[in-house]
Length: 82
Image 1 (cartoon, rainbow, N blue to C red):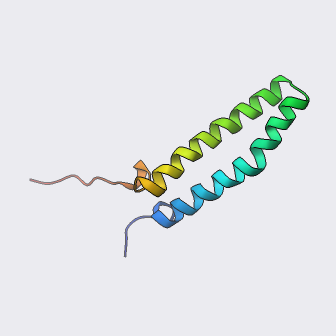
Image 2 (cartoon, rainbow, N blue to C red; image 1 turned 45 degrees about the horizontal axis):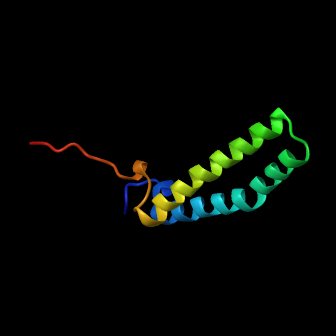
């Protein structure tokens, strides 16, 4: 058995980041941008900016999970004893 928790397994990271990116990019971001265009206010600007930041973060997490072998958290270092 592996000593990693379930949420650090590569398949879970890949599926989770893919779902989050598709959900945010397809459902939440267009709604936030359309609200910003139709009725600009400080709240809609903040909401659209937060959505853009979350999509960018999810995009980098997706690339890390699918192409670079997982997140930085999943690589544990154990101290070597001499």
